[in-house]
Image (cartoon, rainbow, N blue to C red; front, side, top):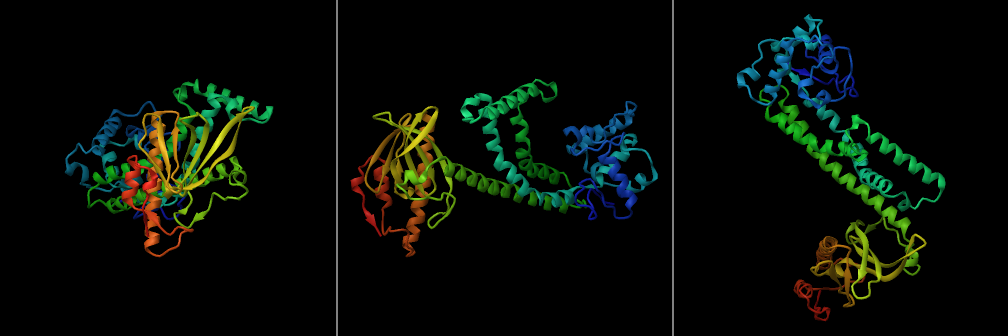
Amino acid sequence: MARRLSGSGDRNDPFRRSSMHSSNDAGSARESLAMGSAGTHTDEWPPNGDEMSIAASSNSGASATSAGGYRYLSSVTEGNLPATERHDSTRSLGGMAEESDDDATKWSEDQVIEYFKNVCIGDVMSNYLKDFSELYAQYSANHDKAVEYLKLVRESSSRLNLRSDATRDAHQKLLQTLENAEKDDRVRRLHLESFLLSPVQRVMRYPLLLEALLKYTPEDHPDHDDVALALSIAGSVATEVDRKSEELMNRQRLAELQNTFDWAHLLGGVQLKLDTFTKLVGQRKFVRKGPLRKSSSGKHLYAILFNDFMMITMSERRGGVWYYEPYRLPIQTYDLLARVPVKDQFELVNLKNGEVLQLRADTTSEAGDWVKDLMKTSNYCYEVLCEALRSGIQVSKVKSVISPEARGKILQGGKPSIIGKRH
């Protein structure tokens, strides 16, 4: 007999069981897996994250036989028992559960093993994983923003550009609350950021957990096909969460940049909507941003790289606030090349006008990251543009591009004047 941990009657209760024979059987299973001896419900599986506490009881009189059964169960889950001992079922636990009023902590070793031979959870995971992608995507998209905010609160409230004493006081109270909470032994001195990360990690662990479960589930077990289906769904959900969270984060960053910069001022009166669909690369995506300096003069610059263009501004701090002025008009990414950095410096080549900007990042690693992202974006847009031109698709006013050979020579230090056109 297969005992399932879900039922069609109530999808919102993950601990509901359906029996192939009677509703009493389902009720007994629910009591044994979801309730402690005092009837305490737990949403954690296994309870407290410990497989040894699956049927744990607060009753100090739990028998040594039961404890031995749990240790035996641990051996089963780890695959340390012979196949015949793990898989052969001689009787149905459903009958035992219906005949006995005792809770699971009083079962014998054989009862425990017999029960878990017939437990099925694949259908539970299949049903509930389907609804996870949207919720986890939203949470994941907001996670980085929340962590960044908490980091700023911890480092210095002055960096938050707080505009009122009331807001500043609120952040000070938040900081004090966080510090007091972290002194509590129950949180083991972990920061709130550690707990915020757990849901993000959980959805990525489901495929691994289900893969391990499928490995130890015999092909003739009634739960095998459901576990395999749950594993497939879990992998799809993890991929979908990544995609949706990336999309949400991109929209959040574009909205933030739209409000942070006066784009009409930077573009000479032209209004620019960042969150839009472009003809060449589709949805505009934020790639990276950060401070740079001119190597020769040390002038402070601030660059923003999108998947279709790069904006370089002059930055100046006045009275604790950064102001940005136009330094270069937007440069299409297919017209950009970035040469291999030397320590914290790299050269940015504008293929459209032949200008070479010598730039310096704050660190050597940041210079390397800028070059990596610039070249990845540039190469992608270049290939898309070439394919469009070969197909006869008009992209802005572009009618030709330089050859790959010419791009290679420029990257090696050649002057942009060697540019050769190709239709």
